[in-house]
Image (cartoon, rainbow, N blue to C red):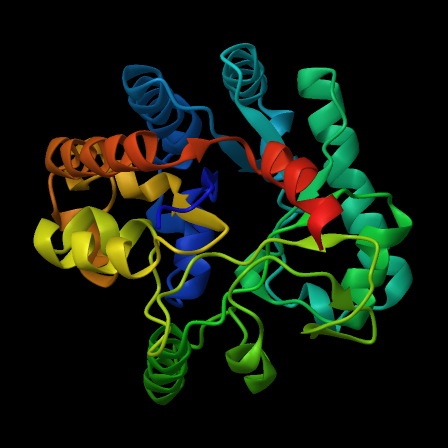
Length: 313
């Protein structure tokens, strides 16, 4: 049975966040590279979505919108029918380790930046680094969010992240990313209402959680890096394994449509290997996957998915 709903969302993480992940100095980025997400990736994703006739959701980082060109690109995206969600103000990977008051301020500042840029206050939130805890969930509830989309219960991703962080530490080039609680590995893989005290468990929380899609069983992540770079038959097999889910929540990042030829420094390309794959090839493969979703599901924004699913959960 095909999934009833599908959503396509893109995290607009600028390249300096990847430097932080890989323990690289942000000085390797020139001004053009710092602006690539909004100058180049956002138009490419808008083109992809428009070509297949699908809506999408962009998760924006508030501090990026101080740049007038970035704010204009986000405004144009919203005019195309793309929902804009809050990805925090500063994308602090350690957001869940901050005080409740500081977490609230981070969400509020992100909201205000998005409101200023687009004229619309966001109703959806995605945590930096996919890390969720009780304090952050409480903040989304207090701020009146309709949904969150931060849960990523992907065992292979968790193991790979732990290995990379360990290797960087040994090289004395520590990552600024953090490793989530192992409880995430047992979190529901389909939409649910969390227990506010333990948001990776089902409960009766006011903010609906829309996990990012992982396959049944081994919980392999169906995200942009996987979908844009692996052989299409492998991707199709994973897609078919998930077709019974109520929501197919396909999460991507802006870098999924960038490559080294866009002016990304070689130091970062060496660490972020998917940047070695030509952007034209990645976009062609993503367009094909988007067409699968359009053929087999009702493709909606994450807000639309939350509005339809909320009464059923």
